[in-house]
Length: 418
Image (tube, rainbow, N blue to C red; front, side, top):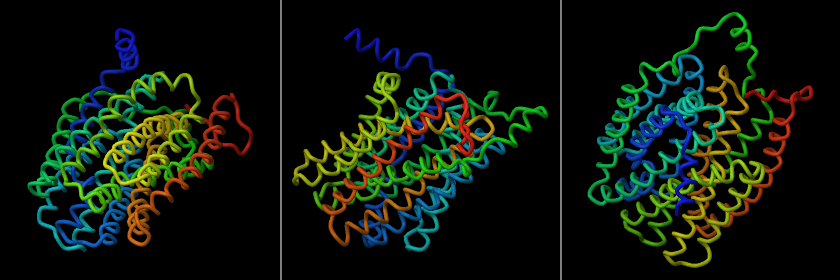
């Protein structure tokens, strides 16, 4: 027991106070994350939308997320991550309340787009903020701490959301909006006078370096990495689109049980990510960890086709959660290591766009396949896709690691910036 406690102490040790505060703020924010996990169920159950219509609106959410990620990354480099995060949290939180009065499909689609546009400006700004306040040797663990807080909040949000949805779906929008605004106010109170978020004055040499800073859109290897990350995210985001519908339509689970299943994902990641990142991150190359994680995710969907028993749902969710641990924190670290202070917002913006694009594709693809061919076919398709993505990521990440180990790179290769 002492060894286990010491291991956890070492995993959490050495992280800066701002990194802890950012994680606390994200926990507050994500504790209210009730709307998106239940949005598909809300659309089909409360608003009587078809499965296809629900998929369209969920994809529109992803389209807004793409735009928000791009805009957030651009604004982060222009005005700093503090202003972008504060705006996203407070204004985005306020927008949830308009859903209390919307029922028509067209209005709902437009509102979902605007909401996701504002909300997802937070992603690149927050990632840039984590990288800014983290010590260089602790970047991966700082991202893992942030994700740990997000997932602890996600274990609270859907579980509470399931209880509120059983009373009225309207309470989901009220709770989500309130927690977003509270997180924004707490963020402002703590970070408003800190120097880390303020743009630094640059001398002529620094300005010249900024102008020469590589754009992520001209970094061909990173673009390939981002495309593959999008492929991984398409598989992962079935968690927020088709899986809740599967639980409801195939297993006829009530909202409370669906909330518990979704909360299990956040609880497992909260409990194990920091310790596994600490133990595995220094000993195993990312080119092995990431592909293995993607394969485990594919296997989690194969489990759903083994039979029809509720226990299989929990096994599949546990596998999906450990897959997330092996992939996401290390993908974020690769993005940080490939950027510098002058272009980190843009790199993080493009990285988060890959998740946002997956938000567009995943719901539409998943609901279309499920409605036409059934959920069993969808799960097998995801298994096959995970094998392809894992194999491609192995070669791409291995190339990134090879280039990072070289003091110089050959002509035509993207510059590695740290």
